[in-house]
Length: 242
Image (cartoon, rainbow, N blue to C red; front, side):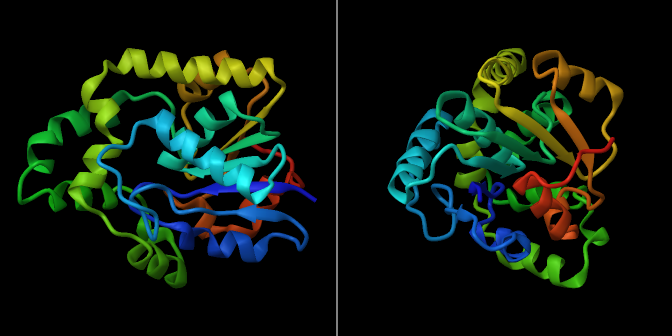
């Protein structure tokens, strides 16, 4: 059986992995922590990626996981990619996170003044409106609505790199991480909630030539739309398809 580390998305917590954990075959050792600042985890004054990764590695070592599959959703996929580039892992499963900054970075930078003011929630609500929540079954939508605690300091804290660094530098870092995974023989599987563009796939395979790409319809939450299929992908028992 497989050791598995599950990393949720920004503002959410470990509860969003409940359906996937229920769908996994018995026997896997699964660690699904709350990221710093989320759920029951302590709030930090800032959330540098390297510090978050170090914190997670301490949890992995304490739990006794060995070469885990690291699966991350959204922001969690960025962290999963960074984690596996510097710590032992067998595979990375990226759930609906494009590693190029592009228009998302532009939107975050444009929204910074609002995020620092009393109407910050309008920014988050606008982003939620584009996540395809209407495609989710009712129980999944309930989980999306309840297993979350958006706060401006949390958004600004985790998006600080986007606000402070050029997009090209961030993308170069992500490319270097993918290159390191490829060099170490660590598999990479991108599960997209929508058909990705040829340009997006080409960028990924420039740095991870053997990366697998699977579309699991479900907007930004493919693991809630089809937890059984995503559980199989994480466990490595389902072939990819494009």
